[in-house]
Image (tube, rainbow, N blue to C red; front, side, top):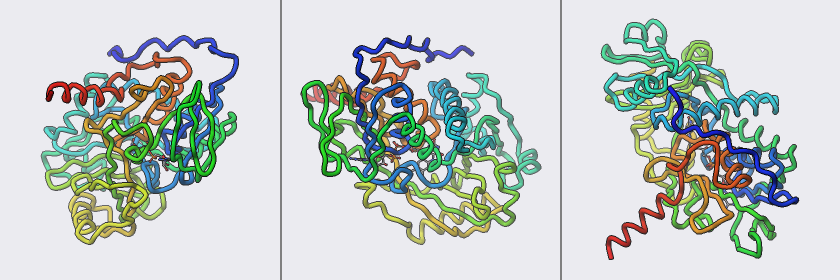
Length: 405
Ligand SMILES: Cc1cc2nc3c(=O)[nH]c(=O)nc-3n(C[C@H](O)[C@H](O)[C@H](O)COP(=O)(O)OP(=O)(O)OC[C@H]3O[C@@H](n4cnc5c(N)ncnc54)[C@H](O)[C@@H]3O)c2cc1C
């Protein structure tokens, strides 16, 4: 099917001024790291700030593994972005010499009438994406690591795979630095001020001047200057690692990454990359809001652990059903679970990229590329991303306020 959201790539514009713009990127999680990479490659002078070190484990871009998938239950509008993201992951691997994405396929398991399974089948049909469907008997033959009920199926996205989040961040920042970006860890941005022709940014104890501001604060959005009107809250996401009974049966070549939907539980699962265990992220258990990721609780109580273990005992017989490790992380969520990506309402020379709502890692390179296009080419990025425009939140608030008057 033709791709309704793809536009002809914007013609490369001649630089408006001889001098390349200086762009302050706030946050070097995966989104800021990719933005810094794409901006620096195109000749911008990049200052990339983070209050912690790249790849740290309080925000959204750590935890060993991430799912890459191309059949998107979150909506077909993402399909062209996923194709471009895949090309850019390949480019990052090729140019950095680092392995970030391992093709394993991505398996969705559940009943055909489950909303997520349905959405995967619908997206595959609408966009004619390659996939394989297995009934319960075929699932048991092919993937005995999973326990399936008689009325369940598996849908394999053969282009899916497993990403290494810390490696991706490091590789993008290394490439950005090679292209001239200045990477500034341990620089918390506390204030931004307008000054003639641009911005002043107070980071650590110093002030920096920039022509453009790109805010990529992830789940810290609520505490970031200029973002008070963007409704992003931080949620705690917990990963549990379970020892494999036979690690080779859950190695990447044998055990695709994926999403399990079941009447009793739901989780994402990841192949073994440490030689010992499989990571499971429960979706059916509470994901509490956190005030700030700086104060993230570093573990969960026994009730959470017991419930996660019960889901594994029931649905993943290849694993010993007691977690050997727990990790807590956070991501920023918007009300509609689509990111806020675009100009900050009321500012001509400032962008925000936040609120990736638990599914932004795989798309990060294309989001970085789109941010670079918005800064360097103006409001004409290569894909229609109007559904991500941050003004959808401020506009709806203004309408509600007007209606209330
Ligand atoms: C456990 C977990 C599992 C996930 N699984 C998947 C998956 O399988 N597939 C997928 O595609 N997505 C997944 N996601 C979502 C995805 O990882 C996130 O959407 C993505 O990493 C968001 O990145 P970010 O750069 O916006 O945020 P972050 O990685 O949190 O980066 C924000 C950065 O900004 C810095 N910062 C904030 N404020 C300031 C300031 N004032 N000054 C300086 N620095 C600042 C922070 O220190 C941080 O480093 C998952 C998320 C989590 C948490």
